[in-house]
Structures are given as structure tokens and as C-alpha cells.
Amino acid sequence: MSISIKLPVANYILGWPIRCQGCPGWHPGWPIRCQGCPVTPRTPLWHRPCLTGLQLQEKVTTLPPLKPKAALSNEDIMRYSRQLLLPELGVQGQLNLSQTSVLIVGCGGLGCPLAQYLAAAGIGRVGLLDYDEVELSNLHRQVLHGEDSCPLCQKVQEATGACKITAFLLLDIIHLMYDIVADCSDNVPTRYLINDACVLSGKLLVSASALRMEGQLTVYNYHGGPCYRCLYPKPPPPEMVTNRSDGGVLGVVPGIMVCFQALERLKIASGQGSSCGQQLLMFDAQDVRFQSIRLWPKQASCAVCGENPTVTHLVDYEKFCGSAATDKCRRLNLLSNDQRVSVQEYRAIVDNTAAHLLLNVRPLVEVDLCYLPTCHIPLSCLENSNSEHIHVLKERIGQVKEQMSSESQVPVYVICKLGNDSQKAVQVLERMSGSEVDCVTAKDICGGLMAWAQKIDPSFPQY
Figure 1 (cartoon, rainbow, N blue to C red):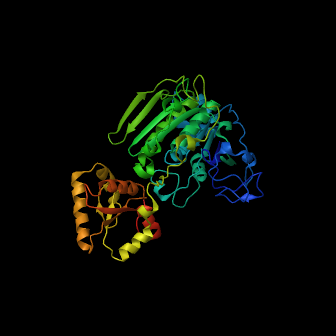
Figure 2: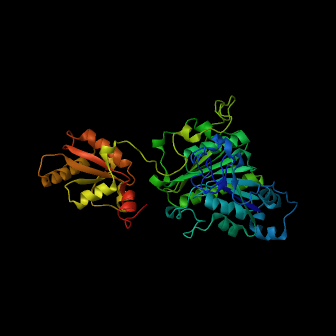
């Protein structure tokens, strides 16, 4: 078996020392640009004509085709004996697995255990693509990583016994020699990229996702079935997409979904076929309930797999989706500079004991994690003008006003986790001022509580 560690994922070159034919020397990683080079870290691969000569600093090894096995060795029989006893698999099915290559895009909560399951089951080649960094908040679901940041490839090697690990640079997913692609990504642009690449290269795509306490699984581009674009011709508005940084995820939910994801790959690779072609499997962890929904058939009007396709090559997917190829929280910029204060400026206000109201607009579940002394009203309650919460707000504003010597407006500083919801809350308060609440001057605290933890109080919890 060989395991190819692919660097990086999706459509960006990040973080490795590389050489560009158009530049005089090695780029030390991030950012991959030196003086005079037109390439920036955000330049998509398909817009990088000078990157055809990119190399890893170490020797680049191309992947040879997998060599067919005539028979299983004694070691193979011992290692895979429990699944070899299954009539549905048998010796021929195991040989099929050994000649199958699977590319895993995304090595997070889905990709980590999937790599382990597929490698342990005897898949001939497992390719791993990921550009993100491992954070402490990932470890409850990314079970191959540890706090010591042990490389993923070492953990997969431990799972498979003796195997060869090869590292090389990915320039274009279309040209990779893989039979099946596993979409374990965490953002919309990457999903469209993977789908289009699979359709254009005739590869199967097994896709899974997990958010909060729900999971989904389906197989695209399989036996004339639909692709991702058939079901979602247009990407959702960026503001309607919830990521795990905002919505959270119960760690075992990706693990449950990845077991079904691995199952479908093993069934396809061994020759049994898939049960999820034109089916969407949905899992509700709260009620421990599975539901299977039949999907639309392949659409003749599809832009990439239809009768008259308009997508014939990879495009700029961040531009197409209007969002970045990451699950990190987007930073909104809804207010002018005079409507915002930094955490340092707010710290000075607190130190000077100036009369003001600090309004926390995070959900209650986040307030239970950490908080500053505040008036707490969730953003949703402000937006809905919840009478109970508006009454509380009026009372707190009145209390602050009693502390002020003049008749000036009450300063209200709004805080949330990252400074996004707080900006929305400032806009809501401005619409309310003078009608539903007394006249106030509302300002947002830039960067929210996470900026406070990073710049003011390192002992403050981060999440």
C-alpha cells in the first residue's frame, strides 16, 4: 500500500517552501510571493500560469499506477481475515480494494477517521489533501491528531502497518490518478470545485457533511446520477451559510457519518455498488433517526454535466460563491470607523470608570462559556423586538443615565464573539433609538471577546 500525502487542498498553495519559474528563489511558505512575483496567496491555481514549475523543496515523487495483485499474501489473509469471511467481499473484493485509489479532500473531523478506516481496510492508495492548520478546538472530532501535532501521515501509517508514504505537490485535481474522490471539505467553494473536477475527469464523488447534531451523505456522478450542481445550480448567499465555528458540531456526529462514508467507498471499490446513488442519507443525532431522500435525476440543464455544459474547466470558485474557501468566520464590515471602538479603547473606558452600558448579544449557550459583566440580550431577541428583553434594556439604560451628570445620550458598547453580530446589533439599536428605547449612542467593539482575550486578558477563555 502507498499513502500519498497531498499538499495542499482545493485551489490554493499554502504554507510549503516552493519554487516558481518566474521568481529568483525559494518562497519560504506563507505568503508565497517575493518581490516582482505576480502570484499572491489568494491566486487560484487556474490563474497561475507561472506555477507550472512549482516544486517542493524536497524531491518530488510522482505516483505510479497501482500494480495489480494476482493473489493475497499470507500477511494479507491474516490482516483482513475477518472481512474476507464475508460472502459480499471475499478474496476478489479484497483484491479490488487493493487496486483502488481514493482521494480524501479535507482531513478534519470527516477526513481523519475516513483515512484510517480506508487504509486499515486495504485500499491500495489513499491521497490526503488539506491546507488548514490543526487547532485545539478541532481535537474533539479530528481523532488522528493530538496536542503534540503529530503529522497525520504518521498516524495513518500506524493504522496500516508497513506502507510507503509519498509527498508531492498538487497542481490540478483533474489530473490525479484516483478512482474515487471523498469530499470531506467544510466550505461551499471547495464543494463546487471538487464536484466540477470530478465531473470533468469522470470520477465518482462520495460526499459527507456534519454540522451541529446532523449529518448528510450522498454519492454524486454515479451511474448517470446527479452531480452537486444538478441539485444546487447556484450557491447559497454567504450570510446564509453556517460553519462549525459558529454553529458547532458534536464530535461523534462526523464519526458516525464517516463510517457510512467509508462503507460506501468500500462497497463501490469492492464491486458491490453504492446504496446512496441518487439518495441523500440524513442523520439526526438528537432523535437518533436516519432518513433517506430520493434525489432528482441528472439535470439536462446542469452547467457542468448537462447536455450543453457551460462549465468546461475549473473557474474561480470563491468569486462564484462570494465567499472564501474556508470554514473560518467571515469578518463583516457593516459600520463606519466612528461607530466602532477597539478593545484597547474600551479597556480605557472601563479603567476611567466612565458611565456606559456594555451589551452582550451572544446566544445564551455562549454566555455560559465566558462573559464580561454586561447586560445580556441575544441578537435574535433584539431583531425581533422581544418585549421582555426591550424592557430590560430600557431599565439598564435608565440606570446608566442616572449616573450621568448631563443629559447626553447613553453610550452603549455592543460586544459578541468576533465583532460580527455586534455590528448588526448596533444597526438595530440605531433604528430603535428614540422610539422603543431612550436615545443612545451605540458602538461596536471590534473583534469582540476573542480580541479581548488576545489583546487585553490572555487568561480569558477562547472558543
